[in-house]
Length: 150
Image (tube, rainbow, N blue to C red; front, side, top):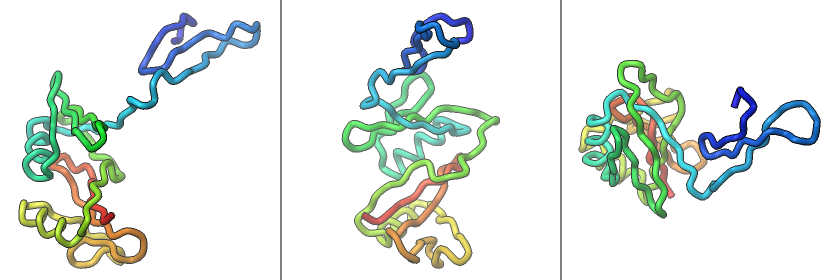
């Protein structure tokens, strides 16, 4: 709110300070229980096919965007960026699995290639060096995802 008027933007209520002090705005969260995350892709139909057919995620589509339907009513927004898309430089989504090796086998059979990190992952792409067992891969847009053993 650069013009100093109160209003609502992106789930925050913006209100001008009224105690005579310097002009600034306070933010009060409207409803954090409905917060969600998101990331971009270069091609929405390609992403939809990958998340549905390869990963088995339920996907809803609305206004050219995707909503990955996760457990407990949670969802992740996947939005188009087109040719300007740059893959996230971090893991954007972790999928808990009961058996890392079975998950790697199943996804490899579907064409997923697991990332190799020298000195970190084994020849299957699994990090077995402490902490939960985890293996990283990318979606068709290059965003990093993982399967992580529960």
